[in-house]
Amino acid sequence: MALTNPDYSNLDYDDMAKNIGLKPKHIPLLLSSYLEEAQPLFASLETAIAKNDYETIKKNAHSLKGSSGNMRFTELYDMAKEMELSAAESNSSFEYAKYLEAISIAVATIKI
Image (cartoon, rainbow, N blue to C red; front, side, top):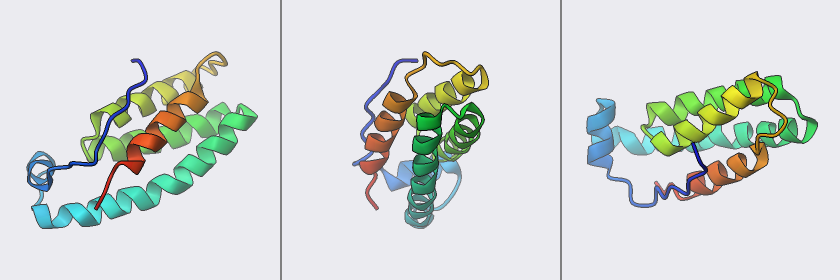
């Protein structure tokens, strides 16, 4: 999967709720929790990437993949999955920092 530039600035809460199986009134709380949990993951990933700590990259990318999948952020899920799988193989040629940057930019488009 190539890097993508998803934009989540115009989320449809009704559609999200339907896809997740919840009521639209719960979506802002879920988004708030998602955004709150993403920040420490990004910080940890940044440190792990700088140290080539593949185990930590794999663990945090896995967490990010799961929460993104739960929210149905498919592009974020796919990019986090690529990071996770590459780290599991200790792939030193994978562009972890570029993927993290793309994911961070996309997450920043999420508005509650």
